[in-house]
Length: 436
Image 1 (cartoon, rainbow, N blue to C red):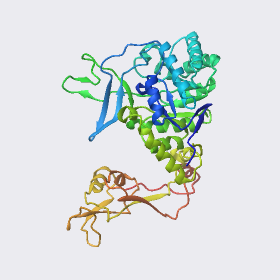
Image 2 (image 1 turned 90 degrees about the vertical axis):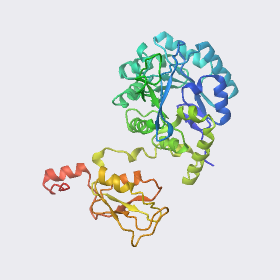
Image 3 (image 1 turned 135 degrees about the vertical axis):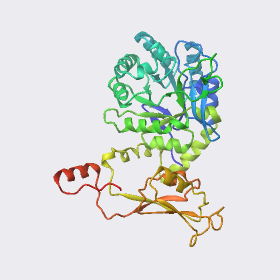
Image 4 (image 1 turned 30 degrees about the horizontal axis):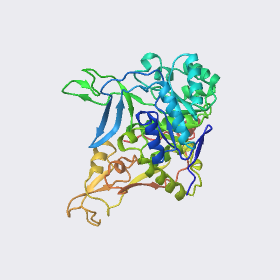
């Protein structure tokens, strides 16, 4: 069995699975339940001056009967006093000395940052996470994403924090920015020990067409909220990679955003994360989802021959590059397994109306009849000369591995767009003809 233990900038935990700073990490009671279920760490719900929340607070984006594909909240930081939170952090750390307990902090002045850092260390926290990401409520007070969107302000505040830091400092970054490497670089310049990303994305998930007010509904009004859940995973993976690949960042990363399975976690780790943080999936299914995540990650690592989860970290970083470096002479085409084809012809419709008209409908003579097929009904056939390898048919097909993408040898050498432009400029080749 692979070793799942990690060390993120000096913060150790028995596995990479951490509860993110959010409602599931609001109390000592919840932290105890999380650790009992198997979580490796807890990032405490953000501590600051107690706030007053509104009612209601959450909404969701559902898709084709699947609940909470995306989740929106307008809840703010902890509504409990710093005294209560730090006392409970001490209680949790005393009971779980080998698990990671991180205090998430949000405040304003230099003196207050120094005070919060001292109180976090005195409470026994293994590290702190600076919340520079909340896109609602707190940013209107000059905190949260109002800080995270300004690299100069990040650098100044992290500098204040590092003056008083006795334990590792993680800077949590907002995705509500054009280039996330800029705030990450600012955190690095100021001496931060690690970064975490992403915080939630500005969003409105739905409009109630009876009240003509978006949800969540607060006495006839609503506001933009923080978007999270499975729908944000691709955005989070991209931003994690951007920072992992940037030579001017080079900080340990705690990945956040849409993680609900071991596979999600493995993808974040492969793109550079050391730990992964989970919120929405816990709010949907409870703390015990970590059991499947631990078992699944262990099985995957064992199957790949990795002795430790740390061997997986960053494995996919170098495979992502600029478009101009990709091979223009590489070719893939779609291939249909007719033993699995159910004759829905969705691939044909998608290709005919939304792609490159590279699928025809033919009579099934000479082809096997897959499950659910009716004799005499036409079936799809790939027109290889027209297929550009876009993947759309394999993506929309409802049957796993019915349509796969296969390589075709073009007999041509590697040529990137950059190579192509250089050869054109030198007169070494003619321009590739456009499709008719």
